[in-house]
Length: 140
Image (tube, rainbow, N blue to C red; front, side, top):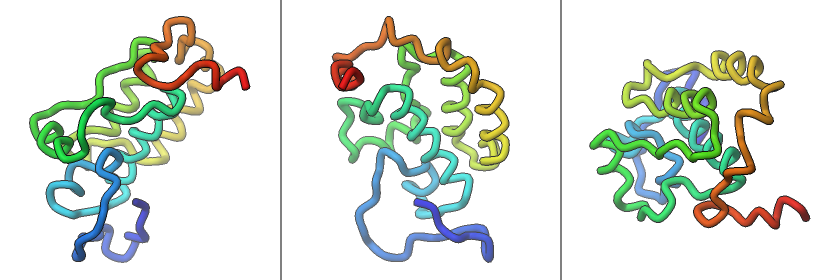
């Protein structure tokens, strides 16, 4: 979803096309507006995918229902095996107001401080492989 928005700082969707709905920011789905802060939203979804070892965002939810759920304040729940601090970063990326989301620079600093804690951030002993991916893939 990244766009060069340095000139106007915003990109508006003018044409009809397919969107990766489960990765698209709230304001992008509702109003067709894209900024670097909407990219931060998408990055939060990618963090979710990484922490669930490739789990699908909004599992068992149809893409057509995502915009309404987000409008109602729904956000993906914290996977049981993910530490609160890492999940809070995701939640910060998913703030309804784009200005309330962290910058990529902020995210870099936050994640850099956590890099030596990787064994406590994701507890694979309680990973729910029925909901996300097959753990056997990790041993390949």
